[in-house]
Length: 165
Image: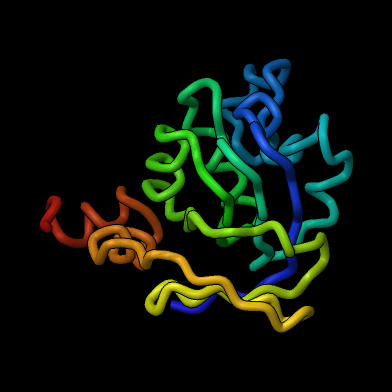
C-alpha cells in the first residue's frame, strides 16, 4: 500500500483536545460538522486547506489525552490518509488503525510542512520527495494492514464475519 500526499507538521504532545477542541464535544453526534473544527486552535483554517491524501507529521506522543475515538476519525474524514510521528499515545494509535487511518512510527525531524511524502506501508519506508531523503520504519503487522485495507476494523469484521489472525 502506497500513500502519497503533502505534509502537515505538528510538534510534540499533540493531544486529542488539540485535534478535537473540547468546546465542540457536543458535536460528537454530528461528525460532518465536528470535522470542520479539527486542529482549529493550533492550525486555524486547517479543515479548509487540507486535501485528500495529505499526511500529518507529528512529534513525540501524538494523540495523548482522552480516549475519544472521534479524534482520529475526524482526521480521516478530512481526507488525511496517514499520520507519521516519532511516537503515539497507545489508545490513539489503536483508535487510528481501527478507523482506517494509518499510524506510522518513524523519524520525522527532517520533514517540513508542504513537503511531498510517499509512504510504502508494505516495505516500511517513508520518502520525502521534496528533499529526496528516506526513513525506514517497521512495517505494520499483516492484520493491521488488512484492517487499513478494508477501511477500518468495522469494515474488516463485516467483510470477514468476525476477526481472524
